[in-house]
Image (tube, rainbow, N blue to C red; front, side, top):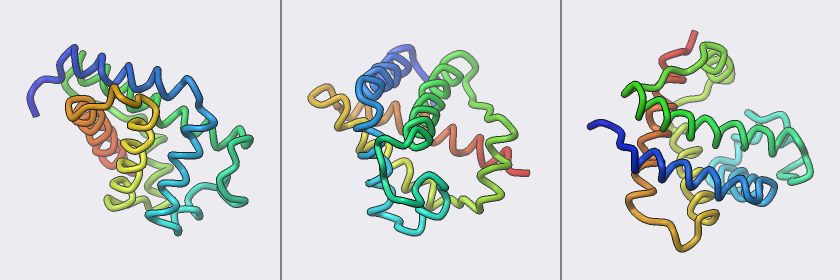
Length: 146
């Protein structure tokens, strides 16, 4: 991977801003997409026990946190050329047994959600920037597995 550019970081930031405009709606898009691809993922998220409920503050908080981590990853890539994940994040994902294919499902749901959020501003360049930021975050989380 080459250096993460200022433009790539700006693209990721713009998608974050679009997501924040309607966190409950986009949280539903995100988790519905995950469950469509991997219904068993419901067991990984305690707040999905009763389905995808946009009024559930844990659902929206988790989505906001994840999308924020992707934004933060873009900033780390731009500033340092690498992403470092909190050890606790690695521990949580390790304990839940999250594997590479599940990270891929989340990535696909993330891209689908952001594509909806940004609308006609979606582009291959934006998609690529988000993918790099997410892939580096996922790799850092897996590296932090205890």
